[in-house]
Image (tube, rainbow, N blue to C red; front, side, top):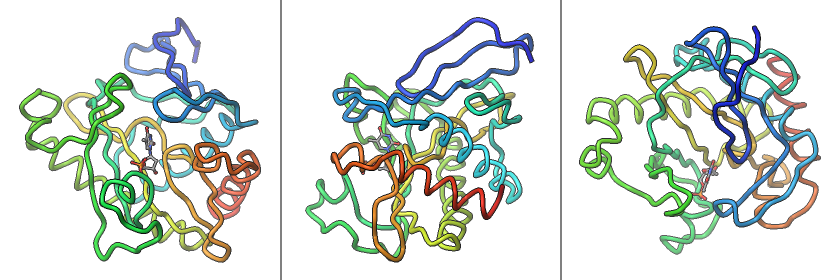
Length: 237
Ligand code: TMP
């Protein structure tokens, strides 16, 4: 597959056109940002880890009937995906209280939720990805009621696959963020699922194995990312 012009450069990935108008290449970078780009750094080999982790998890999800944009991993940093029209929403699923939920509702991090919490955020760095509800999404034309129902159902289905999977490799899936798009009218899971977009805590030590190490200046980010890919490869690779 010939890689053509770069169409878009985001904070952690670049998107390229290919000879096939229906396919794109996503190229993963080592650059890390937090707080909507206000904090910047590099996590060594992050792009390689996130590409591999995301490909293995998307493959696992496909096996469980969740349709994704994944076509195939091309090499360490590049993956071939279906072109989609992206829905400008982030869907967050939470199993354990952490991060912005802990802050907003004044709850202790680590409290296990009796049912998963699903939240929607409008994708906009300028506005700091504000939390929105279904009626905002419909009123501003970001997604239809039907699309919102499908996205939230799929997000819970992803949780039902990934939570037990991570548990089996000694990791608590605290929370994660998904993005969806439309291809031929069908809603597909897009973007990535990686230690950048999930909170992953070691079951034994409760160590953070995700981007919170960078956000909170905890150090050893690269080692934590390597540990995650090592365990996933051992189970699925
Ligand atoms: P939050 O607690 O900061 O709202 O984050 C919830 C989850 O979403 C966490 O797993 C990290 C992920 N996330 C992203 O992938 N991108 C973002 O821009 C933010 C704020 C969170």
